[in-house]
Each structure stands twice: as C-alpha cells, then as structure tokens.
Amino acid sequence: MELIPATADHLDAMTAITDQAKANMAAMNIDQWQAGYPDRAIWEADVADGAAYVGVEDGRVVAVFCYSDAPEASYETLEGEWLTGGPYAVIHRCAVDPAERGRGLIAELFQFACDKAATEGMASMRIDTHADNAPMRRAVEKFGFTYCGPITLADGVEAGSPRIAFEKVL
Image 1: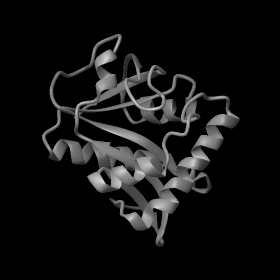
Image 2 (image 1 turned 30 degrees about the vertical axis):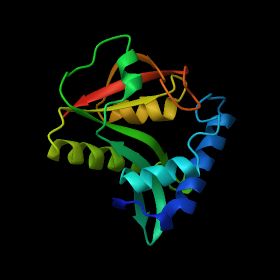
Image 3 (image 1 turned 180 degrees about the vertical axis):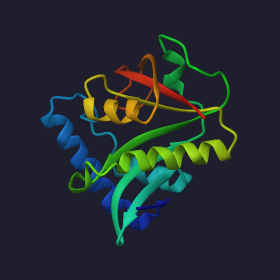
Image 4 (image 1 turned 90 degrees about the vertical axis):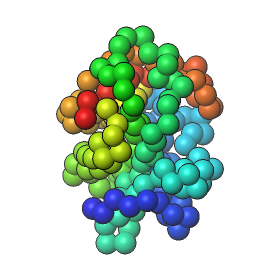
C-alpha cells in the first residue's frame, strides 16, 4: 500500500470507506460516527488543508486518515495524564475498506503518521476512539499506544461525547 496525500479525486472513495465504517460501527452498537461525522465536507476540508491521506493499492483507495499537528481542543479535557508535554501530532478518521480488513493496513497508517510526526520534531502521536470500539482499541494498543484516560469531544456534531485517548512517545 502506498500512502499519499489525498486529492479531490479521492473524495468519493474516502467518503464511501467512512460510510462503510459508520455502518459497521452501527451494526456493532458502537455510538461513534453516528451523527453524520465524518462526511464529505469534512474530507473536503482535510484535503484543502493537506491533512487527508489515503492508502492506495492498484489505483484503488483502501484506507483513509487525517493527520494533524495542530493542538486538539478535546485533548485539553483529558482526565488523566499525557505521557509527554511536548508537541504532538494526531491521527483522526482512520478507516479501512472492509474488503481489506485483517491485513494490518491500520498499522501501516499508524507507522506512516508516527514517522511523519517524528520527522517534524513531534514528541508524540495521540489518538482517541470510542470506549466500545474494540477493533480500533486493539489496533491502537497493538501498535504500542498507551492509554492515558477519557476525554470529552470539544467540537463538531459529536461535541460532548466521551472518548478514550492514547499516546505513543516517538
């Protein structure tokens, strides 16, 4: 899989993959991404900001995520302690085409993001997910992220929703 910055040409596939992820979470009774987020407009903004990335194989988008090095307001609500106080990057909106699950692609996304963050001088990588999202929790923990505590989403359509946050020192 090649990881590249997303362009407007990728938006249909990006939206389809996250729509599939929403449906899968709903089927597992996970109350994450069930209020319309993320949608095409979010991905359009990410593409415009240069924050959206896609994993491509044989010309087909198989994975998506957002990488940000901007401070995350929700992370100020942490009930616990971060491992570092230095600059950090964040991974958001990770999703893999359901036909490609089980191949370790999410770990490739995480590695790419961590390598990018380290190159940019970040002290750590942070990520959050819903407490009931067992597949993402397993992927995050397997990759070596450390649980730091609960947070409350600070903005967007899911503002006020609880999540659990993790950090990996780079």
